[in-house]
Image (cartoon, rainbow, N blue to C red; front, side, top):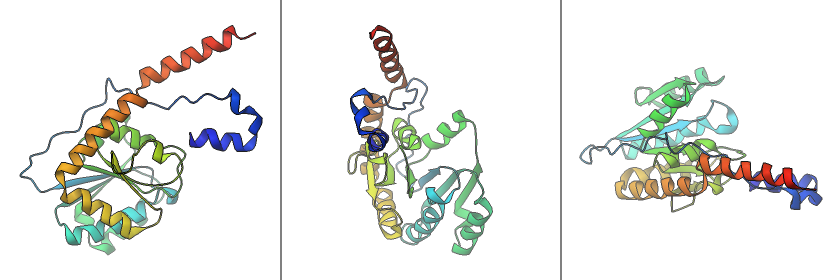
Length: 223
């Protein structure tokens, strides 16, 4: 919807010619998040975007460092790779969290989904975002998402239902959201289930491809 509205801004007259078909994920192969031992206090957080400034990986490290002071049973997986990796690794050392953070470069889609499904929380504090496929993947895996209220993200993450939306570049809000979900296991599970249901209803690739096929058939029959 965000991209559709931005497109209309360039040429309002085309609104009636546009169709909205989501960028879905293959629910048939998406692994559902693992049920971790409830007696294990560890909460696994994942960031799954390229290490670029507009995805705010630096903010993730700052918020994680603040959160771990209040809830020490946190781990962080930074998945994506990119030009800021050395700077981020240096930042993690300076923050004293290097032993709690695992950095990964880009991996194949299957491995990426496996790592997301093993997490308890995804964080996606993008400073700008057109849609946020990573959030759809996390939701499909049953992993709640903490993200910023920018671009198309609210189309995927329903605040208070399947995740938590925070303002961009607000480290305190991001920290508080991490702590809220880290401490409340039942809330994480409920949001994860809601996210998987939303992904199945709106972002199942099979349904989206059916919609696309129907659109082509409509176009072929047009005079």
